[in-house]
Picture 1 (tube, one colour):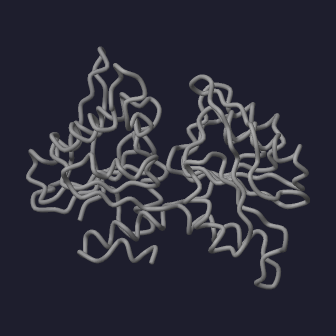
Picture 2 (picture 1 turned 135 degrees about the vertical axis):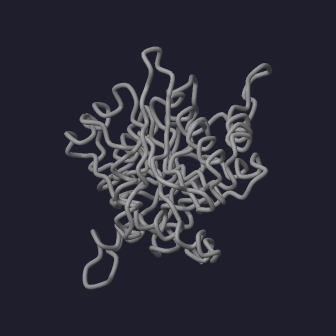
Length: 315
């Protein structure tokens, strides 16, 4: 098989290649003076099982276009199968009509990836599970939950036992299933933040469902963008008597002044995966830590290549 890396998250692509014990395929990606993208594979890929590693994170339009051009290049170079490895699937939050005349952009992106020539998609923690149904090709949606559970156990367990008073918190009603699954694996309590969103990227915490008094709270979410929800939730947890407040998020978008908002918040830690490459501001922030999904992605890639079960990773 062949691993091809785009420009979106080169460190993650290199880490995946290292876990697989194979080099990245030599390729050239450059821009013309008008910012048109040119991509060329510098090795023979005819009949190969090709995996393009390219999260469509900031700048989303550029990284998405780069992915499409890479897919088209490999298709025309007679690759046997093309898998778009998208640890972060951009435009996933536009998965339904929120107003009378608004797009369902997640479906549009699914269509153009398929039309470009991708045979399957490998991604991590889709914002909404129904996005898998937007594709007419197979989609393997991995979960960061087991990686987070392992990290919590490694950092908090004492002689193999989890401390008492640990509570997993869903920062909104939509994430209850994810939080409940983690709470079950850690055999700890569960709480839910009830919030009302007045405007895009702004949220107001209204109520906490569950007992958080004198408890160590870990919030779990898929995407942290403006960080308003998490920071407001941390304030609400502290006001409700929580001992500590941390957060685990699959995708650290952290746009605008989100990093500073996290730094100024009651959050003790924000742990994110490396599905999106960390910015210099994120690296400098002492509260933000990244854990790698490279071993998980590498295992899924080898299972796809060998036609073995991917879902059994989480069984």
